[in-house]
Image (cartoon, rainbow, N blue to C red):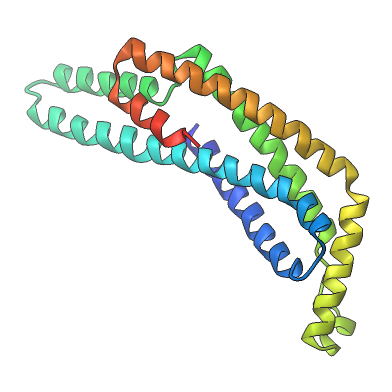
Length: 208
């Protein structure tokens, strides 16, 4: 589970890198083109905020904190059975705090990560089509300003040809907003039920 979240974070950071490269090409360009690209930019920002904060919660507020407590309890254990029981309790608490034992929360989290994964795949395909290869012999011979013009022109054509990509971004934005709202509502309900500081911290982190 942690590996998948970190992999999604890495994929979103690659999308962010592509978006930053696109921003350079949008200097002095029409507001229409900027508005078209603003939607995937905004969705990526929201997804990255969620994934990075959830990853931080998993690694530092759950696993590291529980592992520190585990080491203390094992050091204080007088028998092997005590140490085993403490380790089993550590696993149960980590699974619970990572939301893996709460079926309703985990199902909503799975929906969010699935939407996120679909978005990163689509964004990567769009980037592959939108960025002109400037390493070929012809483009290496022309000036930097001419290369930028070529890349901007290529980006404009790619945007015009990518209607399906932008339609999918609109659909994913709606799905993401609805799933995130349900997840946060369910998480808040669990905070009231469990009075659990970890879940309260997570809820506060994910508020955007």
